Image 1: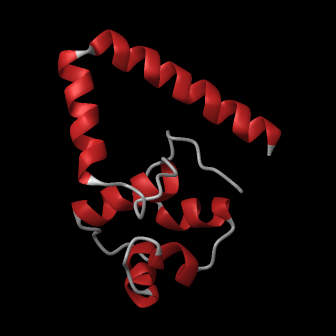
Image 2: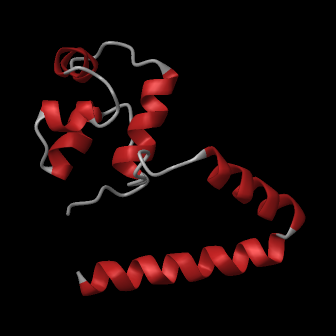
Length: 105
């Protein structure tokens, strides 16, 4: 699977889509936007902030929003504020595990 570097701008969705090797239907449907709506954004129409953020999360950060739950966000918020050392340790371990999975796959 292709990935996009996090420094890519979500203001250039066509470029991100091309880097991922997806057609408009595949790319835009993952964030709940029709192909025709996505085409308008790619042609320069102003993209609302929620759409831009979903694009960033799904296609740049590679987050599967179908699996994300409110409890997950609550746990992250708690760890960041109440257990910052544990949060940093878990974050580092998760990054290393993801890197190992990418290397193996």
